[in-house]
Length: 254
Image (cartoon, rainbow, N blue to C red; front, side, top):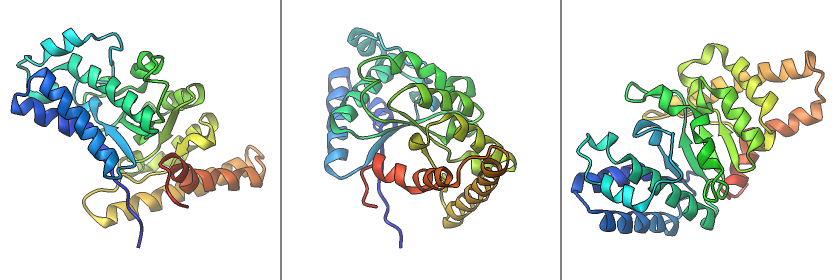
């Protein structure tokens, strides 16, 4: 009974084109066309898992010549062509800014393929200072765990950065309330989004949602009893975090 809205993952396109042996000109042309098609087809946002590929230390000064040369890199596809991937990330942000589409960036915890040190959200700081990096809404997904306080800092100091706290509620739920409170303390509540990261089975969505709600109940109690936060503020924060922020950011009907 729930509406669903699609997010377009850009890295799948890059991997496929590299595997096909596309040259630089053909690859960038087809990549740009894929972005345009996604927007035309009603996708509500874009997503990158660059943290799983060549990492989040994106070079904002990479040149087209460097990107062109890197297409010939013979590394395994998922680690291939860092300059190209860095350049395409900037192109993605520029496209998203023009369309005002949010861009989700995988940060922090992942499966065994990720190099956690390359998934640190603060590696994005140089990119976030560029014209492309200041344009579209950027959502650091998965709460950047275990770097959630660093993600909160970026959301607090960068106008267009938001944080979604999906995934770490599924895999490390024991102290979810503590981590969520740390996010709430620093992240502007208009820039914090709930999520489940449920996958494969409907029960995973249910489990993630239940854990998030249980954690929020504890956060509410601590805000009210320990910090004496007014109940009106808490009600507004809850409404925004669990519904309103996503509806506004992805331009969905309430």
